[in-house]
Length: 471
Image (tube, rainbow, N blue to C red; front, side, top):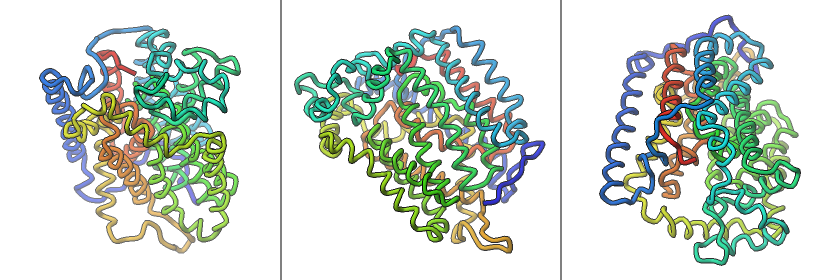
């Protein structure tokens, strides 16, 4: 695949008519702001009168608590530097230099935001509360026996029932922290470092996938927005940052497999997709994103159908290992559904969260993403009825904008399915982090990147300084 060479300044997206104008971007961002405002006001009323939302600051699981902390100066510095220099550096740096810079910036942004609450509350104790994975480390002293017995402790009322997050996820999630403990990386501090450091690499995986499936120009334009994501407020406080990284690398390796014909990448992608499904039940919806990648790369598969063999073989590795160890994924999932409705999920009103979840998504992806998704939708409408790629005089050549918009449509579809399922009522600022990172790529369609980056940074800083998040 031919990629666009670096340029001195970020090039503006090609104009496709008035629907791509900055004024319409502001309309989209304004509509998103109204959605969030409605979710706050209506949610506050429901919580005060009916007490059924089970969140302190609707639509977020948080409480009002303005504060500063040791991470404040660093967060402001990272934000200012990224706004000032990010777009230009992303446009002109060599690709192999850009990727570690994006990872370093994203990681610094996540750490600095987490440290606004201090090391202890911001990182060290997040995964040690009564709901979290580190509470059950000692119960995995015999890992095979624990896996065989795992489903017997999911329901509330069962003997020694698992804490909420352990019961709500397949055992690869808690097992990760058990293995960290076994190699000497014990406690919430190391667990937090693991999630943040790996979570930062998700940005790199997304960029690699976009470069392979669309083009380098769009990947470069998206890079500063991935590094400075408002989602970082929650990526420093939960294991979902780790899940996001695994899922992102699964997609990135699949993109490399179908565009470069790599059997190794196909096999590795399959393994990570399998692991993703055993980290979180909800992340099985990444199959829709994987299907979008396979659709975009169907020419590569037709040229080399043998790619499907290592992909399928890799996909079977993790499920086979856990099944042989005695864990039944389907049985556990059905028990989880029952457990979900035994708790807060049983009283949280579906009619509110079906749209308030989208308000949470606005807060973790920012106003720039709303504007970018509007432009992405415009691209798809303008391309309606036309193929995503064609044969040109120089061989296979893709319409990069349309291919990226098609991938984003797959991500958005996965979120819609998750929303309609009713299994994501509230807390989606954390649960939907793996999907949110992909939506941020839509910012590649925007003009005036520094203004939009400023809006993203201000939102993240306000959220982290004004609220005490529950995760």
